[in-house]
Length: 155
Image 1 (cartoon, rainbow, N blue to C red):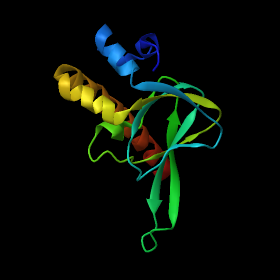
Image 2 (tube, helix red, strand yellow; image 1 turned 45 degrees about the vertical axis):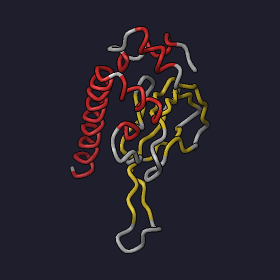
Image 3 (tube, rainbow, N blue to C red; image 1 turned 180 degrees about the horizontal axis):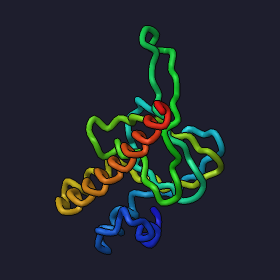
Image 4 (cartoon, one colour; image 1 turned 135 degrees about the horizontal axis):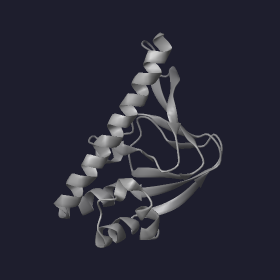
């Protein structure tokens, strides 16, 4: 559990009332990672939603080889900065991570249990709706970052 005040610092949770903040805080923990640690990995079950508290992390798209599924290549997409959400696949079916996140230095993250958060959303439909709005907004921002990277690579 973390303090609801920690969640209140993030605009992502701005729509939550005090009781909802407490409910989400009960599902969260702070976790530390060291440089190079894999925080989440493409293709793995999306068991948690994350926010970067301190430090820096990097998002990679990982592509398998066309003829050899074992052969993979990682493409840098963007940095994840303090206050940003990642691991949003934890809220979107089929609940499998679509990217890989590495700690680019020592960092601390807020880790929220995804299945428990989804269970809370089953009961609180307004919270579920607003959480998905925030998640969609984050996804669109990440998509725009990816488009910028693609355009730069093609220039």
